[in-house]
Image (tube, one colour):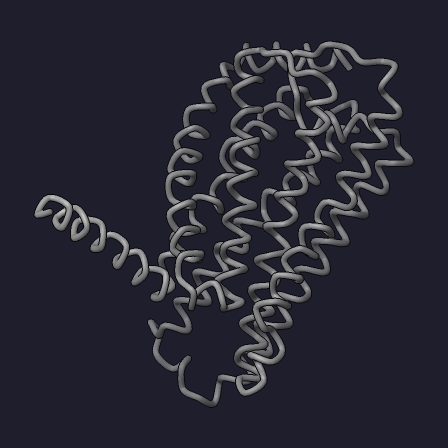
Length: 314
């Protein structure tokens, strides 16, 4: 393990790939400065926090925040060659996989929620009251964390006697170093989740089109329905694409004939750019594009100068 990570680190240094930390830092800081503002808007407004779609948006933003913070810390440590304790490295792997999977499950649930709102508008409130939505959100976290946490416990039990200091901590190396029998479980986990989520998303969108095509909302080329579908489709693609790339990375990691430089390049681009793009776009497409959230944000911004003015008069 230590020899592999040392070779990986040397390859990073030879190609100067540590400079990928610059775009990763920029995107992370941009998102970290935006997501909390939207979360405050959602949770301070009683009407917003009572609606399923906004609770799901908030859950996506929370999962993205945790992912970005842990990912940026890992990228910085790898770029500087800081040795992360093996136990902490395995925990970081579990957190990254859990938060990534939770975001995927939540955006899938958002599509299903939109379908339910259009398909059963009269019974929608009864189907998804706030209490049930909160239970669904908790269930999404449990499902997302079940396999990664189990793998973390298993790796702790298998490797606790062979801890070695390594210059890198990568999810790819942590999962790719598992024995072949357990690698089958990793591939089944990712592939099954991708197939289920993709099938549900495609089904919901097809059914949505069939239900609404007679209402005339699709006739205009630049109708709100078309623009919304395009925006959500692009964002869903951005969320799913890094997972597909990571699955390819796991496959290439097991192939001895693949060039080490190619592995390092693919992993660095995926980790520092591809995985960050959907999280940079989500606040704007899933957050500020909702009129209620943008109105709440404007109200908060207008309220602060008014309060300051009253304080100055007093």
